[in-house]
Amino acid sequence: MNAPKAAYSVGASWLHWATAIPLIGCVGTVLKAQDAPKSEKGTWMHRHKSLGLLTGMIVLPRVAYRLGNMAAYKVKGIPGVSDVEHKAASLTHYALYGFMTVMPATGIAMGYFGGKGLPFFGTTFGGIVSTDDTKARNGSIAKNSFKIHKQLGTYGKFVVPLHVAGAFQHFFRGHTIFARVNPFRGPPKH
Image (tube, rainbow, N blue to C red):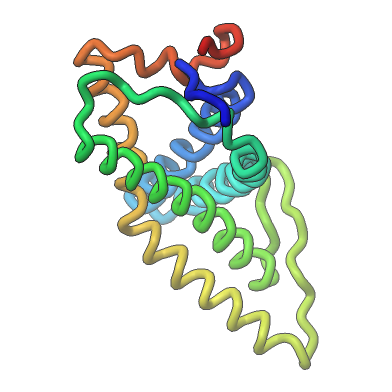
């Protein structure tokens, strides 16, 4: 069995940041859309949906990489961190993985099965074309996806700042937390 390393693999680090940027942008743009005047809501929602689709496109290989390369994520514990703090961090990570997987999946399902398509910056990928036989089923999928997306988004958006706050509290305690996930350093040391 592989011993824990001092840092995540370079691939895992790149996937971390590649997911973080559009995910944070996605949350920010939907919050902006909620507060924007009606004339600007569409623009902000288009940005939100574009970043959500991009997040989904990156999360899929990230989850596959994580499942296929468990050793890339096996890092040494941080000295001075209690078991309670470690368990809280693990719980936050699981919640974050759930959030960044379910939110794009339900957003994509809404657009696709709702028939409006998937906005992606300067273009839109078409949605499903419903027939009389499939209209009710497709509409039901879109409606249920919307319910999940809205409910999870209401509470799940707090997992991102919780994760960031956890990282910064380690940083301010003198832990080299950002070095563990820095994709510009060499391969992880043992």
